[in-house]
Image (cartoon, rainbow, N blue to C red; front, side, top):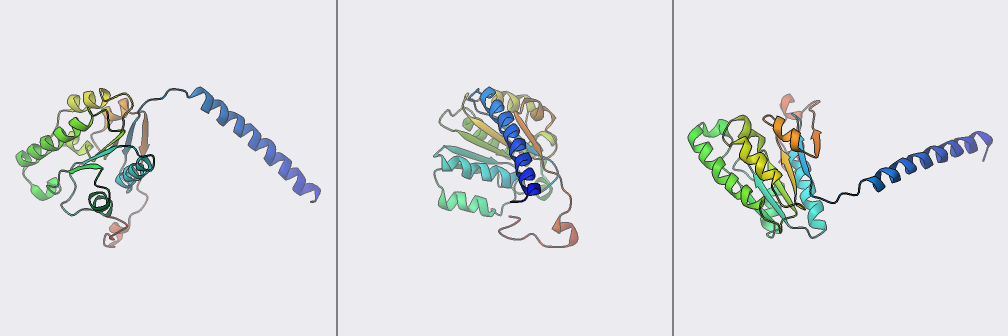
Length: 204
């Protein structure tokens, strides 16, 4: 090995040793064991997909999972079909009325939202559930279909070890305040805007 390559290796080793010390120190300080609230927001594609990825992660550890979907269309996505057909042990409930711009009936939408929320509320009180997904619930807040105080208090009052993942754009300022982790998915470009049809297995 020539001198230049050896110097680069030595510098790399020193840099990685310092980085390892910083990471190990942070891991040692983070000792609190509790459920977390994760908020996935933004105008980009992938919020629900990320949440379902966490469902699979939790199931890998034999955790108990509940999923509630607000304001999704009546056609199930690939993830939902898999949960229903392959993973019957996952508690799964979908509002299933179609999007509010399809129904165009505020009273009916509010009734459906309240019924769906009652399912979510039961999950948030269930200490046997390790993970609860509240998919697209922010729309219920931005459309004023559900009471924000009720939702916030239910999430804050859940069992100590239960984690919650909330997804959606809009209506989420108060959710950000109580979340332990907030990630924003930003749209840079989207195939749909260029006339490309949503693709089965990729977009839904």
